Image 1 (cartoon, one colour):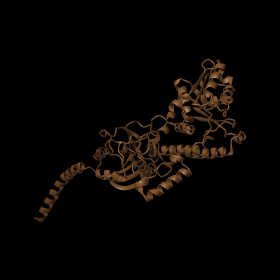
Image 2: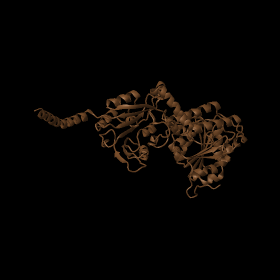
Image 3: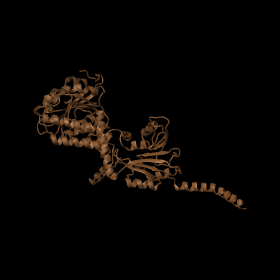
Image 4: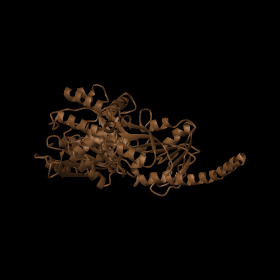
Length: 514
């Protein structure tokens, strides 16, 4: 096996042996660690005993004394941390001690240390951020290795359901043979994960949410007489609970801090097209070749779609959007400040997911209205519906948690309902033509396929029953009217122009009678 680590500057690898009551197997496992990998890397073996009541800790120290040529640390938790909690200890050790990689094997011998050189290769060559061993990649291998039938069936069912909900294609989520690039672990909030066995699922979800590169490699299956501490049904329930909570998190329905992975950016403001959504309806409301100004344009995706329709497009945003099209006029503008752009040349005004971010939406609408004339424009506005059923249930349960996205996005400063949106627009002179409920963006979570579309259809059916209860967002099309100041000025001007004509007409009338 060719290892990519350079002899001149070997990369640092921590072989993390997670143990609990492993006095019968620990020596056997440690002796199987390949000498080739110990030589190819600047390597340390870390054994963390999770408060075992047997001789695991002592046996680890004895093996260390007998092998002084191997750098090794043996630790014992005074209090049992659980399977997930013990992983946190090992990964934190790897981070704090500056390792490049960490490879976790189990002290009960269920995962073969002999596979370490092969599993390390994708990490060492920079092709992966995490490597997961899989017992399911080779057909029939798991059963031949002694995996009980009920575990095999349960593993397959859970994996299929998780792939469906997570939009992934992993062959297995439930193998404990894992290797990570330590800088990636730094980016994962794994300390927030459970201390129980479904830690393994939660850290995979974090990798998927962060868009990190996962490589699966087949490993041999071995089931001996080791004691299994996993309660199957409870484990399955917790795995699905974590997966479903992440599904709700991705949809913006229920924020989960542990699944909030990645740098703060506006990727979650990408367009929602191809199914009934605020963006697809707004795009349909603008006819081809119209003049449009997109206020609060974000990344600029809507400008791209409008340009494809032949529209004349301008965008307004505090930051210059990374526009994928040319010939779009850009106004840099903080919408809480006095307006530095003119909406006069544009027939359609878009305010998509903007109002809820403003400190004083009423003041903004008042400033905007001062630019309107008697020539009506069409306003297309969307905003979150705080009366959505999920938010009501959360309040009922005593929760009101702001997050990175969704209705309770922590950048939202004003939370609106259908009634408050309607009143706010009417107070500022907008004539509402359309007021619709928008379904949740299920295809962003479940995929833009049959499952995602079925969920949207079900949501639309519920919206027909109760718009205020089941709408994720509020969609408005309204017609503008001018501010009274403009009306007064226009009246004075037109009256002044009309008066002389009236005098001339009267004079002409008097002369004819004479």
